[in-house]
Amino acid sequence: MLDIKFIRENKDLVAMAAKKKLIKFDVDELIKADDKRREKLAAVEAKRAEQNAASEKIAKVETPQERLYMIEQMKAVKESLQKEEEELKEIMKEWQGLMVQVPNIPDVSVPEGEDDGANQEIRVWGEIPKFKFQPKSHTELMTALDMADFSRGTKVAGFRGYFLKNDGARLAFALWQYVLDMYVEKGFTPMVVPSLVRREPFMGTGYLPQSEEDLYKTQDNDYLSGTGEVATMGYFMDETLEKAQLPMKFISFSPCFRREAGSHGKDTQGLMRVHEFFKLEQVVLCEADHATSVVFHEELTQNAEQMLQNLGLPYHVVVNCGGDLGLGQVKKYDIETWVPSENKYRETHSSSYFHDFQTRRLNIRYRDADGKLKFAHSLNNTALASPRILIPLIENNQNEDGSIRIPEPLQRYMGGRETIFR
RNA sequence: GGAGACGUGGCUGAGUGGUCGAAAGCGCCGCACUCGAAAUGCGGUAUCUGGGCAACCGGAUCAGAGGUUCGAAUCCUCUCGUCUCCGCCA
Image (tube, rainbow, N blue to C red):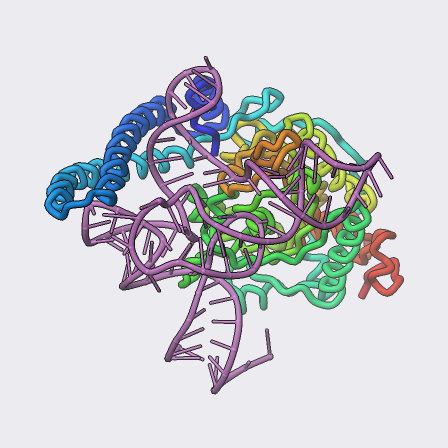
């Protein structure tokens, strides 16, 4: 959400933002609704002032006759006030409905473009492995080594279901442990956060109302979160922080659930796109300053890159184009890791910053040095999404005989072994 | 799942229909006293919002949403949350 004052003063900027993000949004409609809101609010407040003044008088009046007379008079005022309040309520509803659709302004450095095809590569790391044999897919490799079971996965859990077994399961735990350790060392606060989350944090983070169809909903009207970001941001909802507490960095672990409603035909095999997975997510709250946000954005991206480098996985970083940005994102980098069986990079991390878009919706403020309350800035990036990360990890480290080299940092979590083989 | 109690400012806690944005205490800030500190005394200490250069004036907020009333922290309904007892349970 943006400040309505800001929107009024920068309506061209907001219109451009919507255009760049390919989001259908009519600023003029909002301004009109806001004009109506302001006018009605002023009228209602004037009436309330009248009523308050009269009530005060009634309380002081001595004679019962006078009292009854004044009460009789106020009944008329009350009636017209109620009518106006009713109208105001309607106007507010329309206004709020529009306000939650206002896109955040993308950074000038965000390239124009419709979809991920227009994302621009900004960095490449690592050598793409040249196999002297036809590299196998992670599905083949893992099935052959009994690290995963996809047919029983679908038998039990339905479409996109999977089991991790044996070294597949161990490798997942090794990665969680390794990555958690790495972030704790960097000063991140580790958390295990809820996935079953109420509506408000989803509204606050910007997943609702826009992406309702991508979320699982329970019979109690809670939702299953697709990322630990939702609960982690919700943690400080409606709270006022001290400036000295900032920045705060969290590494949040949670199961993640995604309906993948809009991607039925895509990645139907294997671990690429599953309904249920686990994620360690980096979340940062920092002071309300663009330059600070930018510094942390680079830092969060760097953290993820460092992990990939330590594991020896080739990747590149792309800056996402306007059309590939979410409603609240100012700028986003995707890190895509090399997947040999597809002969291309696939997204494993997504790093973005929001300025105060989320914190305004969530009402997360802090007291600045001058005593003023400000909405904090928020950022997040994947630290590790598992099992998706197993795809590049396994495929890039495969040997001709179908065995898998275990990257050095993970070996201590895998019983000191260097290789997974039959 | 059943029965009951409760939700007030940074904290403790008073307030059961009108002068209550809210007593008192604690905390915090300023001033006085002091060489300094403690103690003491005096004063100040919520947020959002509309108008105004400002002083200031108006509106809203006592978990949240509705309702009754000329008037609600106070009465009624629902929701959320906390606590106690019983039941169930990894």
